[in-house]
Image (cartoon, rainbow, N blue to C red; front, top):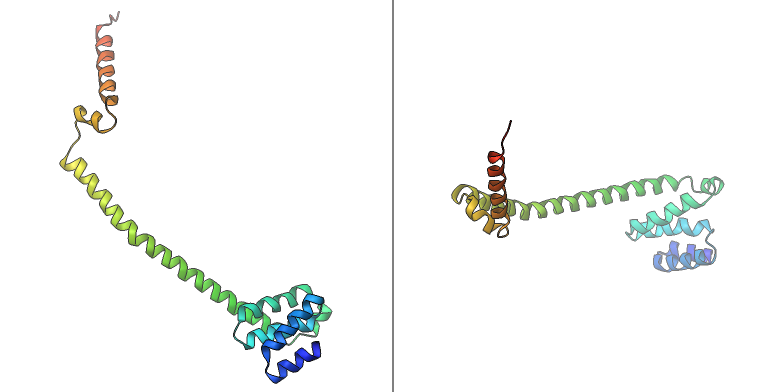
Length: 161
């Protein structure tokens, strides 16, 4: 099957070669030639992400002796891995930038609205102790004010020797 895959590759029938090599590694996951061809074939059909995957498996899962057979291919795998990582990094940076722009698009108007409300409340409508309690939960402030007044009058009425 390996020779047939190589023949398909040489004839330019890349998909048939890929299909055979995938079958080969499903039967024998240690057949290094298939990983090498899969890397080259996927790269040739414009799928560098998949090519890098199989090239990475070739580099990672095989002995130094086996990798020696691919000493001319390994630098190409390294180069493609670096290119692919650069694309990933650029994509992530682009997505982060989009996210930040999206957040700022909505955050700035919301902050301006909050600032306007606070300015209105504290500049134009200054809260007084009499209506503050009604605004924040009914009798809470009124009770606190009442307790404070009672305690002050008790302290003033206490005899200090």
